[in-house]
Length: 398
Image (cartoon, rainbow, N blue to C red):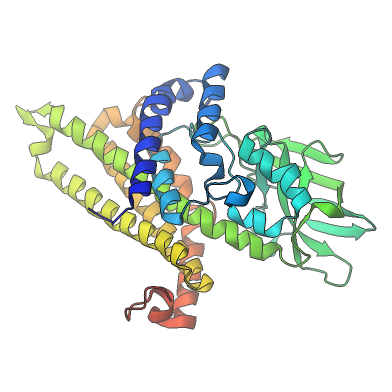
């Protein structure tokens, strides 16, 4: 056993894997050949099944109807979702724990509960053309005007914006007593002044797009402020920690499927009278892939367990960066090897290795590039030392 998972975690692993294998993977090629789209009825069924399973409320508190799963249980579920291509697992929204901590009861009822129930969909409007991964450098402003904020700025890579009903938007305060402080706001997509600038084409073939939006004198009620003025970065960091960890989990799922697919092909493909898998060059690629996956999975599960133990938040921030860095780069290497093992077949879009080769590349970029993760890790190491970073002296909970 690579990690001592609880019976509940193993049950989540089993049922999500079954759903992915039986309901999502069979639609991959159709999605690939049709701009990421599958029949409306199939997508509706997937969304309903995801909500019935509880995927949209895994991280939500029980008192609001959530499942309050441990972080390990969530990572196990996300790992299985990573085994499918074409963004087909992106058929539901997620109500995350930080939202319930930051939002008012009225905001929870209007925005967050509908995410859990599947009646409303959100997207994050954070990234901008200039600062990129440097969230501190955003230029979008929010100016207080009596009972409203007036928002101005452009947001790039608003993932899922084409399917969303509202944005969770990050801006800097303009004027007032705390200029330059960060805020998060709920912004309804149909608000006056919200403009879709364009929808760039990306390497992957997903039905969820990454549009660019312009916010020009968009008036947002003060009641839509998430948390307090100046706490925006705190909530963004909470989201980053969660998403970086879950990206790592999904990368592990992708690598597992790639290794399975490449191994099966290597056993069946006969070259010069013997199975491809008998050649040492192929064995070395498979061995490296399996070893790196095991290491990434151990990192992912242990980082998730550190959350469940209540480890220090600053140490967790660095560990999530380490885990995303290692797992995302691991999965990219595994995808490259899988394409090589498949040879010409690995360059066909109908092959999962080809799709993963394109899709996994962005995991080294979004939610902070690999370079940004390295800076976070180095700063944590220099400030806290190895013991403070990951408990090398036996204190795994520090």
